[in-house]
Image (cartoon, rainbow, N blue to C red; front, side):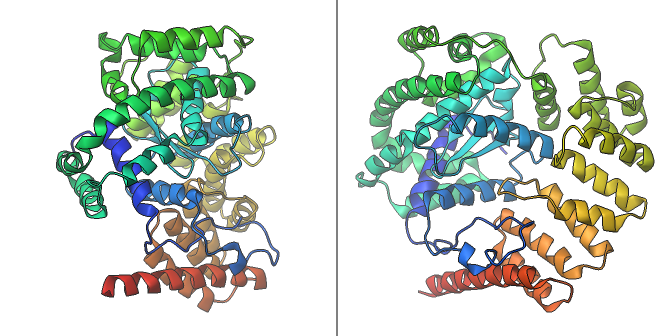
Length: 477
C-alpha cells in the first residue's frame, strides 16, 4: 500500500472528525468501558450515557486504527507513550477531557492530533529523536493544538466552504482505506479551495502551539531546550539523515523566525537535563517492532545487546536471543524480553522467578503480568493467573494482548462467561460491535458470572443492541 503523506493523514482524520459530528450509527454510545476490576453497582448501564462527546470521536478514530492494525500494540510501549502524555496533560490548561496517545507503525516522520484528544506519533518520528524530552516536545505541541481548539477552528471554517460535502468526505475516506492516491485525489477536488487559507492558519496555529507547548513541556519537568533542538533538526531536513521530514513540514511550516522565537522562549525556563533511563530501550524497541530501516546513532553496549536480542526474538531465534541478553536483569525492558524468551523456550519456572522478583519493584505492570500469566498457565497454575489478571484495571488503551491472556485464563478455570466477555471487550476496543454483541449474548447465557458482572455485561449489550438497531434503521431509510 502506498505511503500516505502527512497532508493525507491530516485531512483524512480531520474530515473524519467533521463527519462524526453528523448523526451516525454510533453517535449515542458512550464508548468508554467501565473498569473491569470494580465490583459495585456503579458498573451497569448508567456508565453508558446517551451523549456523543468529542472524547467519543477520539475513541472512534482510535478504535478504527486498532482494527486496521495500524498501531503498535506492545504493552510496554503503550504504557510508555501514555505515561509521557499523562505527565504533559497534567500540566496543560483545558485538559480535563481524556487524551489518548498512540504509536503508529508508519515509518514516516509524522505526528498529528485529532478531535477527541487523540495524538498519534509515527514510529518514524520516534526513531529520529535523541531524548524523551524531544518526544515530549512533539506531544506537548500536539496537545496544544487540541487545547487551543485549532482543529475545531479548522473544521468550523470547513463547514462554511460550499465545496466540502459529506459525500465527498465519505468517498475520500473509503478510497483512502484501499488506495491512498485515489483517496487523496477525491479529497483534493473538495478541499483545493481551502488549502491556501489553511496554510496561513496553520502558520499562526503552529506559533501558538509552540508557545503553549513549551510551557507544558517545561512545567512537566522536561528539558525546554528540546523544543528548539527538534526544530533545528527539522530545519536540516535536506540532509540524508532527515530527508523524510519533508512530508512533516508540509503541514507544520517552519520558518527561521519560528525557530528563533522558540529558542528565546526556551531560554526563559530552567533547564532540566535529567532524562529517563529507559528512553533508548523504548526508541530501539519502536525501531525493531516497526521494521524501520533508519540507522540508529551510536548506542551504549547494553542497548546494542538488547536491540540485537530483540531482533532475534522477533525472528523467532529464541536460543540465540537468550544467549545475547542473558537470563538475569533488573532493568524492566530487559526483564520483559528475557521472560518472554524463556516462555518461548518452555523455561517457565525461570520466567516466573524473574518476573515475580521484578514485580516487587514494578507492581501492576501489564508488560510483566502478561508473560507471568502465560508462564503460570503453562505450569498448571491457571487459577493464580486468573486472579492476577482479574485484579488489573483496564483503560481504553490497554493492550489487546491483555484481553487475549484474560480470555485464556478464564477459559482454563472454567469461567466461560468471563472468557466470552474478555473477547467481547477486545472487539469493542477495535470497534467490532456486531461481534461483541454475539459474544456478550453468549456470556450472559453461561453460568459463572457474579451479579455485578452480569449487570455490567447486560448494560453493555443493551447499549450495543440499541446502537445497531438505529444503524439498521438509517440504512433502510
